[in-house]
Structure formats: C-alpha cells, structure tokens
Image 1: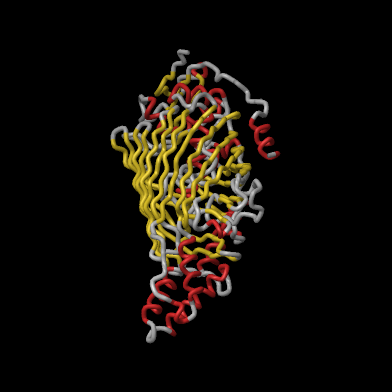
Image 2: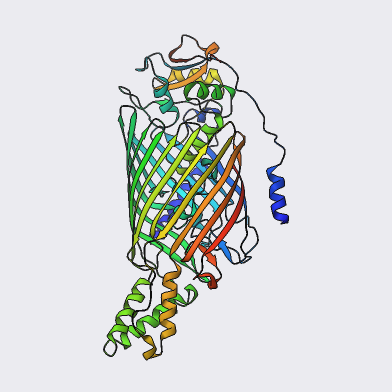
Amino acid sequence: MKRFRLLLALLLFPCWAALSDPARADVFVVVHRDSPLRELTPSQVSDLYLGRSRSLPGSEAILVIERGQDSSLRASFFRLLNGMSLKQINAYWARLQFSGQVLPPPNFGDSKLLLAAIRSNRLAIGYIDASEADDSVSVVLRLRDTQ
Amino acid sequence: MQDTVLRAFFVALVTLLGVLPATTVQAQSTGGLRFSGYGTLGYVQDNRNDIVAIRDVSQRPDSNMGSGTWQRDSRLGIQAEYRVSPVVDLVAQAVFRDQVSTHATHAIELAYAGFKPTPQLDVRVGRVGYDAFLMSDIRNVGYAYPWVRPFTEYYGWIPLFSVDGADIAYLIPQGDAQWRLKAQAGRSGLGIPIGDSKLDVKADDLVTLTVSRRTGPWEAKLGYSSFTNRNEVAPGGGGGLAALQQGLDTIATATASLAPAISSEATDLRRQLSFKNAHMNYVTLGAVYDDGHLLIQGELARTTSSHKVVPHGTMGYVAIGYRTGDWTPFMAVSATRPGNGLRSAKADWSVIGQSATQATAIAVLNSTRMDQKTLSFGTRWDFQERAALKVQWDITRIDPHGYGLVFKDPALETRRSSMNQLTLTLDFLF
C-alpha cells in the first residue's frame, strides 16, 4: 500500500517543465549556389530531415546539416515544415539512431558556420533564420510563419 | 573460435572509438565522434504474491514475489558513433539491463561498420540490431515509444536482440511512397533462465527478410525470420531438465523391443524437450498510422518451432493513442495463443514404474505454453525536450497451462489467473 502511495506522489510531482513557446520566425532552407537543387517541397525537405531519403531525383547523396538540438530555430523549422514538435522529433530520431538504422545529421548551432559549410559543399543543405540569409547561398524553400 | 573473433572485433571497434579525437566544432561538420545514450528508470508493482511477470525471456526475476521491482524495466544504453566519411560509419552501443546472462558481450547491442555506397543502399557488418518486427531493434529505447515496454505477449518471448553478421537494406522511392527491402544474416546469442541455471541460446543460420512501405502517416512491415538453436542445457542443469532428458533416452532404449508404445512416446518427449537443433520460423505483419496526433499501431505474428518446448504460437496487439500537447494517453490489447496443444499421456508407463517420469516430462512441455492476454491503459507525459514520464496499468489474464511468460507458483498451472500491474517509468535521452 505504501508503494502505491509513493507512485501516486510521484505522479503528482510538481511540473517544472518549461512551457516555452517556439519563437516565431520565417525559416529558409538553403543550399550551395551551384547545387543541382533549385526548388524543394516541404515534403521533400521533411523526408531529408527525417532520415527517410538521402537524395532527391536528379541529385547525388545530399549532406543534411542540422541546427542546435534544442534550439528555438529547430523548433520553428519542424513546426513550419511538418507540424512536429521537438519532443516528437527527439522521439522519432531516438528510434532511428539507437536502432542504428540512420545516424543523426551533423549539426551547427552557429549560422555563420552553417553558411560557411553550405558554401564549401555543393551537396549540402541547411536552414537558417530568414533574417540571416544572404546571396552567398540559394534558398530552395521558404517556410513562412503565419501564426 | 567465432566468439574469439567477435570479441576481438568488439575490442578493436571500441578501442578505435576510444582513441578517436573528441567532438569539436570542426568535427561536427562531418559528424565526428559522438557519444549519446538513453535510459529508463522504471518501477513496477503487481497484486500477486504467487506470479512474477517478466519483460522478456532473458530475465530471471528476483525471488521476492509480491513486491515491486526496479529491475524489470530499468536500463541504460550508451552509444558511440564515428562518421569516418560521408559513406562510412562506426557505431557501438552497450546496454546495461537486467538479464540472466553474465557474458560481457551480451551487453553489447551494436558494434558495426556501416557503408552507404549509394543513396539507396545501406550495408552494415558486425553486430547489428535484430530487425524482424516493427519494434524489435528498439525494445530497449523506452523514449522512442509511448507505452512503458514493448507488449510482453508480442515481444517478451523473442530470444534475439542483436545479430552477429551483416545486413543490407535497399530503398525504392515510388511517388510519395517508399519501399524498403532488407535482408539480415548471421548468428545470435542470449542467456535464458531454465530452472536454477540457464540456457545459452546459440542461434545459427539466422536469416531475416523484411519489406516495408511508408507513405504519408502510414507504415507497414512484413517480415520473415528463421534460425536454429545449437545449444542444450548443460548436464546437471536446467532445474533437472538435463537429467529428465537423460532418463527419457534410457527409457526409450530400454523399452524399444518390449514396449514399443512407451519407447515411441519417450523418444518423442525427448525430442520435443530438446532445445538443441530446435528450428524456429517467424512470420510477422505490422502497421502504424501516425498523423502527429492519432497513433494506431498493431502487429500480428505466427511462429513455429520444430521442438515444442520452445515457446511459439500466434500473437498480436493493437494500440491506440492520441497526442495532445505534451500528453499521449493510450490503450492497448495484446494476446498470445500457444502453437502446441495441451500434451497428455499416450501410453501407460506404470507397467515400467515410470509414471512419474512421464508426468514430469509432459508437465515441463506444457509449462512453456504461452496463453495470456493483457489490457493496458496509460499515458506518456513529455515534460521536457528529452525526458518523459509514463504510467501504465496492465490487466493480464493467464489461462490454464499458459504460464510460459511468467514465473509462478507451480500450483497455479491448471488454474486461470489474473494480475494487475502498475508501472511508472522515467525515460530520457542524453
């Protein structure tokens, strides 16, 4: 009986979860200026970032680059791209990563480093806050935050 | 010899991962060396003092029937990954969990080199996850699914977690859908408690073939797997099973000419009670619908065994959940039915004074049948980005001679039992 009380107490343990709301921002998906990719659909980008495909029709293997794991930019990106929350994404990737099926993409927290990586690799793809985009890279998908 | 080679491979891989440079900003651009992991801290309490449930057949519960336990579901997994190049990966994963085996290599779930020669092709060589069912290669990763554990009726009896060999997967895009064909071959090992000792399952000639199709929120997977166990319980072990096998051999030989009916039955009982050379076949079908809110998942399997002492039959489950904010309430029904009918005596062994041996052999054979159903309710609460609390209530009914998935008081064998379990887990990633 005491153990059941303990379980009940744990269940009612005060919630310390941060009820943070992902920051609102447009997100641009960017590639090298000489990339064979010109324009992508949200579905195509979603498949790349969910590890479901490694290439697109007419392209070689694409180097997908992620952002900081728990960053607000990443939260906005997936919310606008396919409606998934970071918690859903983390559970989804836990399945792929720890089964050994697909390893998570490399990630850059810093936008300048990300842009430098995109500029140096013709087959790389990444995403940035729209306000940080410049003409050194090509935008292949614009995710507008209309909320 | 093969074990020595395998051990050398693990040592080389782990050593290699250990001496590689630590992750740096530069290394992140290609992946570099990364350490990560997952864990579950779980406590389960049930209302029976004569039955102890298990999560899977590799466990032998502690003897304190009637009390709660942290052992059944708690586990910790640590993974090291090194991306050698965009097309070559090295991965090693160790899992610390309750299991009867004390072999160090049984804690290694993954240790492989992966190659991606084309965007559609994946090849892995080494120790890879056993991949015949929807969840068979993520059974330890509680954070990856809503419920507290893979449904015992469906996953609890599977004696394989990883495969020493190789697998190859080929992806075929078809419009908005993707087909994935995968073949896996090799061998596997796991310790299973038998009486007060254990059987070291040595699954040879392991072959697994799967076909998956994903489109939108739907995913379906069809699988086939087969293997042959090459080990027997050690002489003097298996809670008297080895002695029983020897006794049946003696009776079969001694009665061959004088009482052929008894000899024939003893020969058959001896064969059915043998783990060695037992050949298993699994056929599985699973499907998932997940639109981000509504989650429906179900699997159905039919398994056969050439030797009846190895648990087999028909099993399945259906689970339905709904994500609303950070909460995912769910319910599920899971069941397993034995593939072998209830065995009874065929000949009269009292004429040779061996009725007790006959009764024991039949009782042992019937004791591995799995005939139980569970109704589960629960919820998952994602209270942090990388941690979730889950609570689950299981109501299990076990039919007579269907106790193959639990440890119990022998007096229960011919009765129907029900059991309630409450489980609370904290699942996390790091």
